[in-house]
Length: 268
Ligand code: DGL
Figure (cartoon, rainbow, N blue to C red):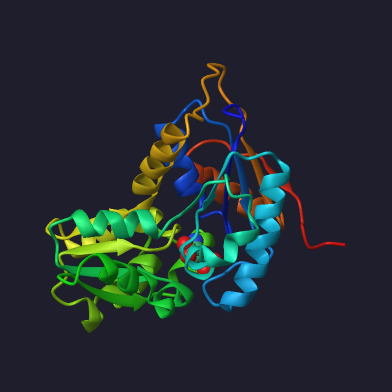
């Protein structure tokens, strides 16, 4: 069991930022990644549509004998609650990208927290609702930034176009007075540097990839299911719709050469 892979999925290739953090922290672990590029973006879809897509993907990852599933997408994590996951085998750990961040925010000293993400994530209000269950002394000021994920997926970052779009969002009055900013979309680590340039050093940027990777490490340790095999693992990367553009972007998101295999779970 401990030699089995970790299954990770996202609407597209953004979740590779989480896969990359997991593989850096846990280099022995084998990863099976699924990017649902045929249905991207999830951020504008209904919660029901995202749940249906996620179900097929989780079934696919389970059929590859994954020992742990990571929902590496905030929009999917906001839509797929624990109640919905009842059909997943009881002993199968599922880590999403919201709970570890909420735990992290509850421990941090900041009281005025900015949060940017897709419409699905922001409109679900899942971050403020869950943080409020732990503490009432913090305020989350959230803003939907729907142009960012498609812009990044198209390769528009670290240039003047992305700078103008990011600047326009960050100037929104909803973010006035924040002490930290949560990047509540797994695509956003690619624009972290540009966000930092615009916000300055005083505002902490919370990049969920590392927080989630540490959560995965803890869960594996608790169940004694870390992979001990020393040979470097061969990861596998699947997408529901292949284009060479996705593959180039995947290399940038994962930080290493990635070979994408097309596997459309919805093609009958
Ligand atoms: N990466 C996804 C997330 O974290 C968003 C991209 C999309 O809208 O599909 O929410």
